[in-house]
Length: 81
Image 1 (spheres, rainbow, N blue to C red):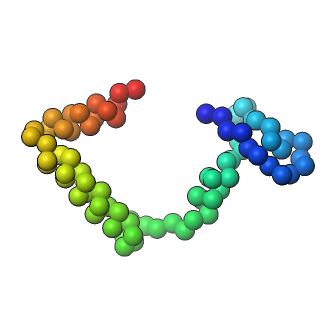
Image 2 (image 1 turned 180 degrees about the vertical axis):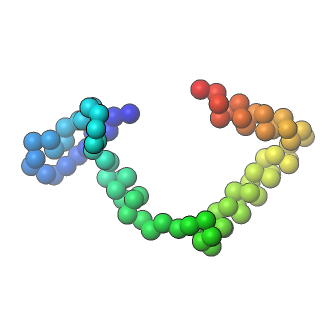
Image 3 (image 1 turned 90 degrees about the vertical axis):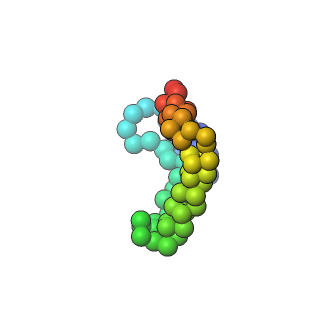
């Protein structure tokens, strides 16, 4: 994947595309995401997300006539490359 970085900097590499190995330019969205506070596995917000996810997964797997068939279909979708 290549990302073109827009910059207002006057450096010689501003706005250029780096395709080589090594330290790569990071998209500003990544910096923004990394600046957000982290929360752990015991955080109430994380637990709420997990509760919603479990409820949705139960609907998918337990709502299917043959739960093992649903699991096979899900695995096939994940590994279909």
